[in-house]
Length: 490
Image 1 (cartoon, rainbow, N blue to C red):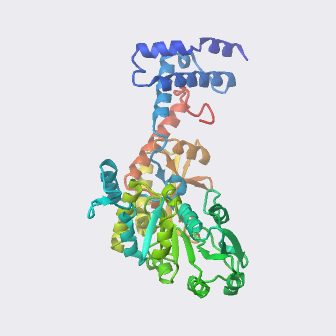
Image 2 (image 1 turned 135 degrees about the vertical axis):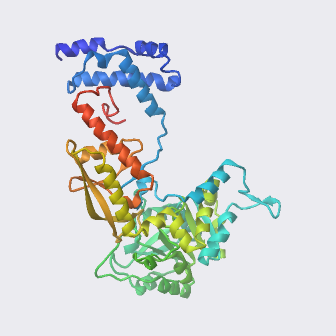
Image 3 (image 1 turned 45 degrees about the vertical axis):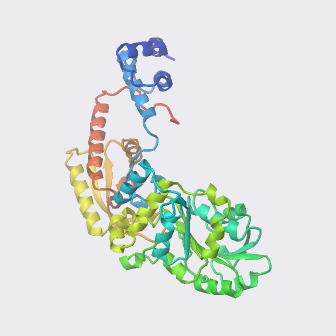
């Protein structure tokens, strides 16, 4: 440690001095003590680490009480801000699991606000004047849209699969093709969910080929169910064979065994009608005669997180009566959002335009090109030759474990900043408010306009203006207040 570091450490004030100075000036009035004291300690410790590291020269002004008070206020503001915050999705991944999956329609949000801020008939039958079932809010419309005889909803699709297996096949064998033993995300796997349900997994076929005879040969006295799991998050190509759902239903009926299909993402829209890859619809599964089908509410459906269970009345009634149902039930806000989303499907053209997930998936390339051109003009208009913005023809993705082979043509922007690496640019934008999340390719920060909302073009322009201004300021040595990057792991 050199003499200068000794001097700086000696002039570093203690917690009491910073607290007294801030209180005297009225700077800490709106900050709760439970936040204030740790914030002061954090700032002092950050400065101490900076001094000891010797990587950034500090002047006496950086150690002044006024400077520290300003840093404490900044730290306290960050700590008190909601951890869950809005983000700008510039990745081109429509159903982005890490960024909240599907966006809700404004129509849905209006209904959600009304139901969540007022009393409702959640479990009250208005016609009979007595307690009712919360599932009645969505059961009717689900049956109407899909042709199902009965329906219910739980908190997510993994719960739906667990509940169905626990009800219909606990202690019995469930036969499933080896090529369909999917991992559904977050390290949760079909075999694990099945084991937790008490059902016994019986694999048939090989990874790439399974035939009807494989099921026939596996059926015995201990068999309780035939399960088909749609491989919505991956695809096996080449020398393959799989048993179709109608064929599996025929086998089940011949042996008087229930047949269940886990569609994973699930969709009520035939995407092939919009030039996209064909994905089996919920309606098609039910028309094939499956006894129970499960799928997610917050993926291709474009609604809130939920696990939807459809099927025959006899099977759904048994599932509803399972004690696990109460533990896995959804709340009034999810029900309100799901009902409002489903209502949009009564007219498919309305659903395509009003449900953000469907709109982004089917967005014409010409619209994306227009957004890319507008954003490029905005960034070029900042007039800083350090910033280069290049149009690039790349691909968007459906995301959310859906449509794995689908590459959606897109016009993206590849951005470089002369005095920052692509990784440094990504980190700065990620820590901006609101965070702008993109991807890096070929040493460029990529912005895909497919997943941008209309007002976000201006927000991105504003962020880059701030970045360029900050970069200029740093060159002139103007910014020395400790920031959130000083201490790691925060």
